[in-house]
Length: 87
View 1 (cartoon, rainbow, N blue to C red):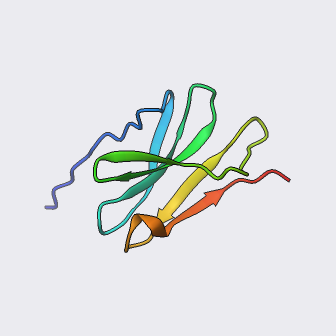
View 2 (view 1 turned 120 degrees about the vertical axis):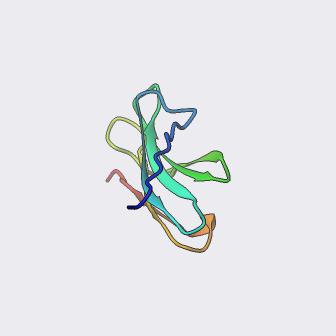
C-alpha cells in the first residue's frame, strides 16, 4: 500500500485562499493565492521559499490576477504562467 504525505501550503501573503496547481520532479510547486484585497497572485514554492510571480498586465476586472498552472521538470525559470488579461 502506498504511503501518501500531505503538506499544508500557506503562502505568507495569502489571507483567504492558497492552493497548488503543479509540481515538478525537483519538488518545486506553483499555484495561486488571494491577498487581503481579494486579488489573485501566482506563486512558486522552491527550497522552502514562496516567490510571488505576477504578470504586470494581468487583470480580472477588479484588480490584478495571475495564476500559475504548471511547471516543467527542469527549473523554476521554466514555469508556465497562465494569466488572465484584460482587453
